[in-house]
Amino acid sequence: MDQSVSHRFLLNPQITAATAELFCHSGILSFKIDNQQVVPWPHKESLTIEGLDLTQGHRVMVLCDGKPQQSFRFRFSEFKTKQPCLFINDLYQTAQLWEPKKSPWCKCK
Image (cartoon, rainbow, N blue to C red; front, top):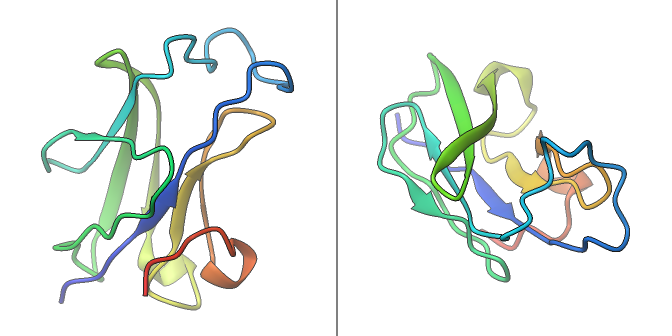
């Protein structure tokens, strides 16, 4: 079964509680899920990621300037819906995955 993940990114260096390791000064972020290709992180629009197995765990890796910056694992079973929203938290600059109802900025349908 295929499912999708939508996401967004905002970068505001003036207002952040991020540690130095998590702040991408260049703003050149990308990400990959599992063994999929690296994708440039869209800064303004949402993007649907397809081809993820609902029954398996997945690893999300965020890269800054092509170098791994942060990563985490998730399973779709952790969510009520099967289209969680992947985004960078504006304050802490951490990658997060939330339910669509709690992340209205995700516009994927």
